[in-house]
Amino acid sequence: MTTPALTRSPREKWIPLHVSLAFLLKSPRLLGWSVLLVVLTGGLTWLGYLEAIHLVDGWTGSFFNQPPETDAWWGWLVIKGWLVLKYLFLAVSRVTAFYLAFLTAYCVTCPGYVFLSTATEKKYLGGVLTAEQGLSLRGVMTDLVEGCKIGLLGLVVTVIALVVNFIPVVGQGLVFLLYTFYSALMFVDYPTSNRRWSLGQKISWINAHRTRAFRLGLLPALITLIPIINILFMALLFPLFTVHTTLNFIAVE
Image (tube, one colour):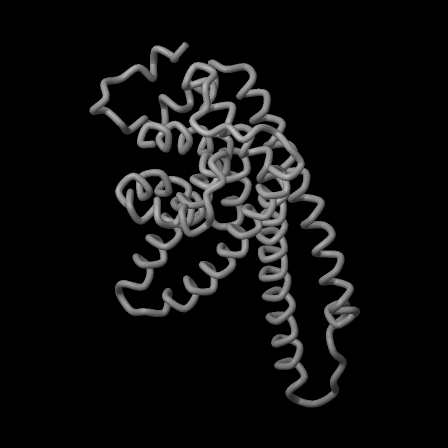
């Protein structure tokens, strides 16, 4: 049975975020699975972060444990430079480690979000899926591979964004658009996985529905602009964005 809040005329194909939130909160099964995914994603991210920091600190050895000793007149300059390098290294290494840990957790938990998307579609369509593949080991491995592809693409997008950011005037706007459409691609990956779409097909869907993709990726892209805590917000809101994208995807398909 379709939730009353989601009953709309055929011309109204866009489902607002607050309606998606209501749809999620009214389903104990979807809500319970979402909480489990948040805990799992957060736990894997934290463990990966600790391991990454331990590994990086092991590589640097004792270089940052104590300042260099020097009796020369420029010694204070050497020490100041060492302090700047130390704190810069700590900031960059911690943020990078946390981002990579989250990206790894995203790849590992991808089958779980595919399941959440599938359950959302089944509930919305009254128990019938458009292209149900069924739960299997091969399907889970395929979801993992597709998730890794999206994750690797995220690294490529990050590198491109760093370069584009140096373009005067329009650079920052282009970077924001890049992250907006990439965010949409991340969440479109889940409902399309049930249909076993390739990465090329997913990108083609984004290109064919640019306005809808922009609206789907806008809020996640805005969250990524918040320093440090952006990944924490994304981990908490990932299930909601998954449900929201799934509902708007099947409204078109």
